[in-house]
Length: 150
Image (tube, rainbow, N blue to C red; front, side):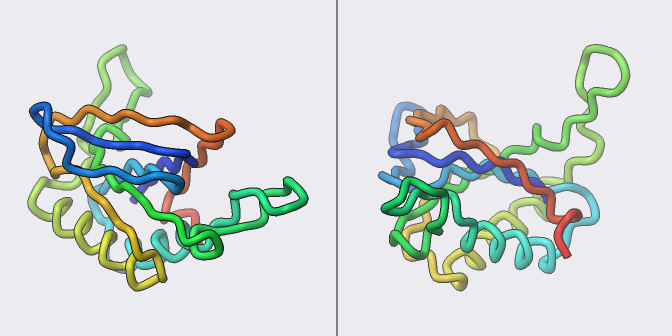
């Protein structure tokens, strides 16, 4: 399971011109579910993200987490994070999990974020053509793969 985390001062996602998710300060999380991912991957990744200290403290040091500043997340499923670009010029998405299972793990990841103390969890619509607007704060962008976590 892969996540691209962007620290934002605001972001939103729209589907067919309608806003379906919006947060102010927090994280935009693009989540890619890959073949072989399990609930354990969702649990590890959500715990890491909820406690990730990338907000600045009073000394302008990255030292505060979502929990510390009571910020929210907007989680958007993104199968293209599983792209294999090693051969040719057209990405191969064979490593992406099948949609039904990917959606189950996406929803479970969102539940786990709440269990890790994040009160505001907004979502996109799984499988939809989504438009994302954001103001990246910093910019701060971090990529985490659950397979790299202990």
